[in-house]
Image (cartoon, rainbow, N blue to C red; front, side, top):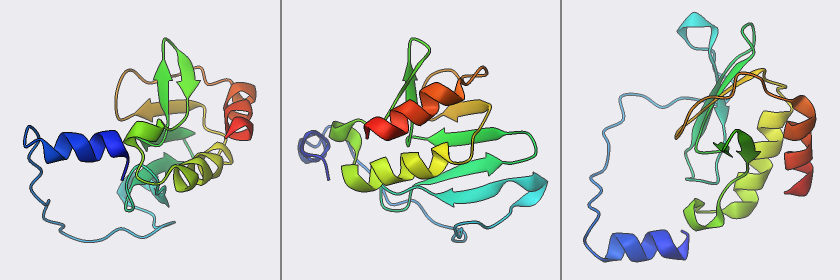
Length: 123
């Protein structure tokens, strides 16, 4: 776990109660509506993203982000395993999405595939 996150949890300022899981999702599982589960560990071990191949939409959660309209990769301070996080980004980039929705901030609806592939190459 990233040091800054562990320190924050250790202060008692943040209390995390375990979430109750109704059922586990499996990598490549197809959900109702055509959404496909993509296991993207790194931010957390069980992190997932959701891909809709027909619509070319990718919900990245915290695997990817954007700042001022530019793509950013995983932030080490918030990734439990930065190597896994980088591998997950490469996995997502291979899907060639046209629309990216993030766990934080606005979606990108004009994804430039060159920028996406360049980000993956830098990790």
